[in-house]
Image (cartoon, each protein chain N blue to C red):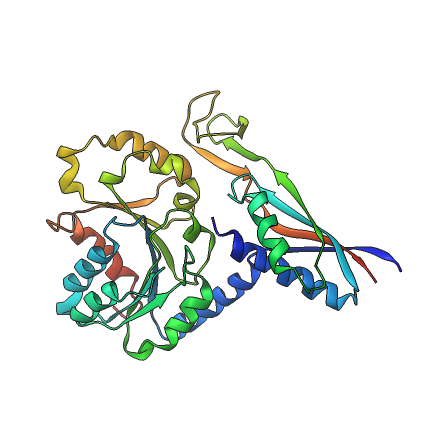
Length: 114
Length: 221
């Protein structure tokens, strides 16, 4: 996907908040990523180790909090988890479905040293 | 030395979203309708834009086109210029999508006061463009039938964010194993009631309905 742009955004947000908090170093970064946001952790970490050099975030560990994709059937109200391919409601086979969760894509928190 | 946890909760692409809002304000101020046109490579994005330009030519509707490509080429913008409309070629430098900054810079180079419509022809890709808001008024995807009927299942995110779906190259349907029912069921699961136009840029079939819809969106028409 576009892991480099995403990693650059993470770095920008984390450094900005770390500076505001007068941190001397960022040690950990917690990201919340929904299952439907197709981001590959290893790829983000690969870019992270390169672009975070010589910043407040150098050496900070990235933690990925994964949120499962949950769909709800608008016909029978059945909630089900999407693991692989998009499927109709397993209970009533209706195609009228809505995404409840899985789109999450934000930086939740950072841990810093002062 | 003290350790601290700082709660942030900021969308990772928030900076892009803010710029996208800025682009939208700018387009609205100029009374321009705008489209983010997405598709896989070869689905017929440029042909579709040219067909749209030609169909609206007699009505003096001015269309500016922003052409995104991952390489420094001017193939597409040359075609738009040859059709008499202004085009800006954006080289994304290998990036797989366009973002709000690229559109902002491209808007600087278009004669906005003269335009009725801006079309951003995104990089040919069904994955990355879906994640980046450009500030345009609508997301339009061209799905061409030779690509296969399983694309909504394989690329769900792009279908979920759409306002309009164009099914292109329908003149090829007799020659291809494309299960329209299976395709449309996938679309219905992802984006119920999605506005859809089935067209052929080769034969012009179905283009009138698209043009009617588009005309109805233009602020000054």
